[in-house]
Amino acid sequence: MNLGLLFNDVSPDPIYPGFLPDHGEKWMAWDWHVQVLAIPGFLLCIFFFVIGIKSRNNKKSANMILFLMGLFLAITELYKQLCYNKMRGFNLLNGYAWDVFPWQLCSVPMFIALIMPFIKNDKRREVLIAFMAVFAMLGGFAALFIGQQNLFWWGDVGIYAHTIVWHLILMMLGFFSIGYLSIGKGSYLRNLNVFSYTYLLLIIFSLVAQAINFIIPTIYGVDSAIAAHTNMWYISMYYNSTVVVLKDIWNLSPGIYGWGWLVAYIVYLVGLGLGDFIVINIYYWTYRLFVNLNYKKKIKNLKISENIRR
Image (tube, rainbow, N blue to C red; front, side):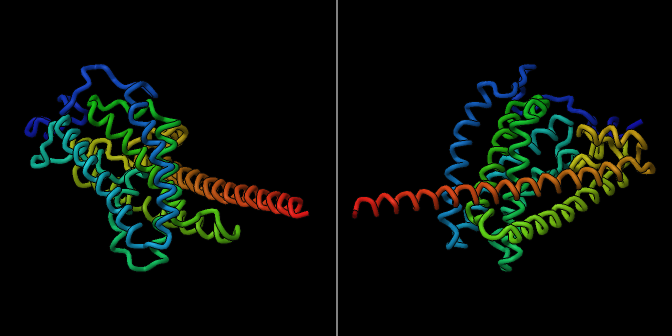
């Protein structure tokens, strides 16, 4: 029996209404609610790409833009944290729902953006921005275009709006970072280096996620309301993944004493690494395509000019 349920009136699942309950009318993928937020958001992605290009020679300006975007994410995240904990019966004094702790892959760019003004080493700073160019973009795109319907289980309209806006801002961060770093520019080797650094950073961040996945259920108990479903990056050794394929691997040898979680973790890292590699290649070959098109246009204009002179 979970004593937390007796003394703290908390539940491992949401049982109370949020601040803006949906009253059973959940949002649907690409319904009018989503479109009202998404269409301006996609236009802003182009805006932030241009701003990123214009900020290349202004480190202070770029840092401030990234910081403000991270601050906006943090403020909206505060609503989700307070609302979801209320729905679970927590008030942050009697406990905290660790399953909503903001250290999912889509949450990491918020922390990176917030620390940008304080990173003095240029190389480390560029690696962090490159990470956002890949994984903020990848996370935002995957959530909105592949798994959007899975975003609307919360039961609170405010969290629905937060979730859509959050992933749109991830894409804006990605576009800004691409423009700022000119990812794709230069030799193929340069872009492979970008891949290696961002992938190494991914592994480091995933280890932080696994530390949370292990420590919280170990301290509070796997069945406690506080620790229930604590599954950062969906690679927990205690709770099954919700990611397709990974959950089946986890079930082959379930639990912390099984090997399923470890194999699922490795497969997940390999899959994300492949995604990293593909995204970097898309940036590189897209850049090369536009360079070649621009070159051909200049040659054509030059020939036209020569013909006119004759």
